[in-house]
Image (cartoon, rainbow, N blue to C red; front, top):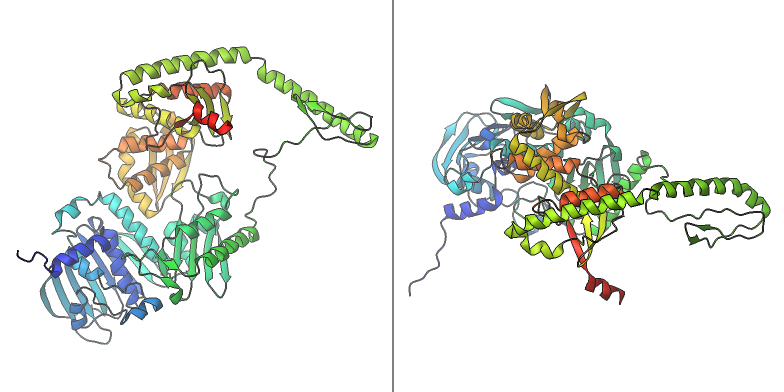
Length: 625
């Protein structure tokens, strides 16, 4: 039997490596700009065509390369950053693996012009799919000018999976923002299809944040700073009142390198507990400076994941610093007498006797007030409170019989239509056993978030937000397909300031939004005016809805051709649906349940989350013993 194991050619090995390092045009920009930073550049210009699909050009004024170094730089594992394994634990550069340039050259056509500072002649190197076509002397400016053309030209499967230009451009903008934030001492210019999107001068971190995300952000952030023997923390956090439901700006940096760190992210969110709504997220721009020997950046080829030796200690220091900053700038709330989850305080109604027991709503008050002086002072207040309380309870339940009749009728209608639709729908026939008990006579709300109702097999628990989102989504989809959206002009047009990446997405989807009843107009400088919204969205926040649509398209990674109506309908449903924590009347709960079970698929949200669950009678019996 002949040997079957062979050594892969370098070109094939580089294409395989490119699958990890170079995922899209944004990955190329990240690697090339980081090389420019490592070369000591103080000015970096990025030029794009067709969102990087046709051309990515990075020009810097760094140290440049000799003709030998220029040729060797495109060999796999060729690097100037480290010499031995121990150097991995004292890194001060962005790159060190020596894989990026080789990976880029394997899946694109590369044209490099570079010259060392102080030299009079440079070199030009042309590589086509890992194959060096030419290298010759050429007069050029000090530094490097590298062009990457026709990305993935020799890997058609990879090129086919590139997204629409607007989506790829959005990813490029996000990568550019991360690079610009962490390198405030470098001038950056970003040009796309001959249009200058960014021209950033050297600036402080706060000024760079305002240059990237809008001047309005300057007044929405407060500084965070602390210095210990373990870590130095500096940066900015957002004020609680400016927390975002959509597209929060959240950036971690360590030793001048961007990173993702869910553990530290959770530490910051913990500091904002009870300061912001549950569905909102704070903005933050946090830079950590630690001893390079206490971190490991050699975990993933993209170098965005970092391990910390003193992770627990840094978590505590970060939490203390953020809380101290929130307190120092009066971002913490005043005393809030929120009655939700608060203990019930008994009402005292003593007479002139020494000790008394008060019964309210059939409940026995174990507390007593002794002394005639206290009794006289409390008597007038408590008696008026009791009378108001009693009148309120009587008013609440005087129409109970009518409410009960409406409740049963609506439930019966909804459940009947649900059963009929399930019989005609093979995918949901197996859910018939989960029908709600039509003889049920009680519907309760738990924590203002969940609806409890008896089921034939036990107790049904319905998530009110998910249920309403399912109902609205189906309604919006039906209207969109029938083109029944009508535009309703807002009383006061609302201006929405976007980041450049968000602006690129909105520019692309604006015509489709107008077909769905939106009336929006660009005001320049990445700002749009919302003049009108679909009539079905009356009562919802137009700004949140618009940002939600942009976020949905960005997260999906798809262009306009695929499921735009569905994504817009989902965004509108998310924005308009009943929120967790919102109190519902019995009539509102009845309508929500009946509307839900009229749908062909009531059990799942459009994203596939469960809308309700059933606790079986046997399980309840087992819990109670």
